[in-house]
Image (tube, rainbow, N blue to C red):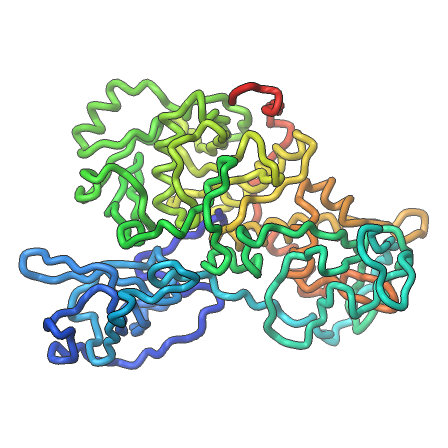
Length: 546
């Protein structure tokens, strides 16, 4: 997902929100405490030397997942606790601090959490900044927008108030939380939120421009998909007990074992790029011992050697992904691929994507899915940049199942382009959509950024007509953007924009938010042009078989 995903070098970077770790210079002591058999065993925990993104040495706590012996030299596969699994690596004995080794307990070989084996790095809790303080700068007189609210009929009336009156501050979204740290929560039916029919005004306060926006009640999501916090998308707290039966690609953590927790492919050559996988992918066992796995960049078939690839290229007549080209502007094209009609390509695409997606599993039954592959064109053909998949029929309004930008193309705007294209398809279909949960940590960052920019672009474009304050509601924002109402509300909460002021819900756009948005939009050069899209949605519910 995630950009949808951002490049992570081998030296790695710390996950957002992680606390600092001790960087003392312990020295590996071969004579330190070992197991009764005199050797380091799987399940041990100890500090391991690594280089961070600032090229500094640090000693984070790590768990030994596997041990192997090559030519009489032992190598240890370590997972850094509270770091993402993509940073896991093989290390030598010299990088271990044996003085602080922790051996696994006898009754449980590896620690467990929620009944799942081993330590799983979850996304850290995101921090949401406190309400924007007045900067002391004088801003222009704000545009006043009239907003209408009403307590939904299906909700219980607030004690001491009438159903048609605005909600009190004690029952609203409460964006002005006193704590500097809090979780961003999806609004559920248990949390009353404003609707769209009671009048509200906007007033300047503390030098900040204030605009009003309505909020709609969010639909309560299944707890087994989201957990307790939407931002903790990778947390094992909210892991589903079993995969959904509607074609979902959400990973079932209950089947995790030591094999799937370790990277099994050393390197992949795809066209002119060599990729270093981040996670396990179920390629055939005999290919996992190869130093390089060679893939055809057009049909994605894999080979054991460069000679095998060259022989294949003499027979492969593809110069673009199979399927229909539904979008082209400049050198960027999108191809729609049916998982049933092009099963071999779809399965190979899933195998490649699994190398960079840990939160999704791989199903060889690709029939229920459509795949949208983004390519870059040159004289040699259409080269894959990224893709997203979606269910042909989604009962939960998902418009994306998996989404990925390949590492060589990350941090270049392609991730947001994939997200924007998925919502452009939803607009043509006349639906609102949302990505399937859980999102990866990097996918969540990309979606948050896209939602924020898209919503702020609409709010900042509102203008007063005939001296009256313009009006906007959550429903109207959702219809314009095809972003689901729950995502609109959670984004406004994440940005800490919603406030309750003198009986009204208002949206505060500070100077910092406006300036930050304008700077971000100047950098966003790649956009989808709806005029270049040639797409006709199909009603899959009327088809006997996909």
